[in-house]
Image (tube, rainbow, N blue to C red):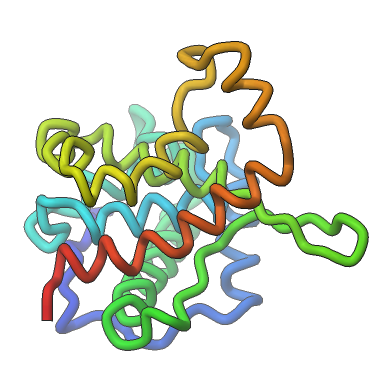
Length: 207
C-alpha cells in the first residue's frame, strides 16, 4: 500500500478508545518480528515526531511509518498477514498521532502519556522506559536536527530524563545502572518525562 502523509488539517480528531488502543497494541505484538513497537513505545515515538525540529507534515509516510512494525519486508505487506491488517494499523496510528497533537496543543495539563504502571503497596509506580525508547527511536532518525536541542541549556534538561530511561544501558556506569534499577528512581524520572513534554511542545509550537 502507498503510505499516507500526515496532514493535521485532514486528520480524524477522534481519539482512540481504550479498546482501540488495546487492539492496536495487539496487532503490533502479534506480528512475527521482535522489532515492532508496543503501544508505549509507539506513543513515545509519535510524541517525538511531533516535537522534532523537522515537521512531520513534511515527511512522507514511508519515512516514519514502517519503523513502527520494524520495517517492511521484501514483499508487501510483510510482516502483516494482509494489506487490510496493515491499513488498520496505519489508520489507527494516524488517529493516535493527531490525538496526541491535539491534547498537547489544546489541553497540555490533561495530556496522558502511555507508561507502564505497577502497584507497590498503596502507591502506583510508573515506568516510562519503553515510551522513552520509542521517543529516542524517532530522535535517531534525524540526530543532527535534534543535537541542538540536547545541547540547549533549557531543552537539554527537559530531555535528560528521556535519555536516561531510554538510552543504551551499556553506556552507563555500574553505579548509574544500579540507580536506574531502583523503581522509585524510575518513577521519579518517568514523572519528570510527563512534566517535560508539554514544555517541549510549547517551545516547539509557541503561541
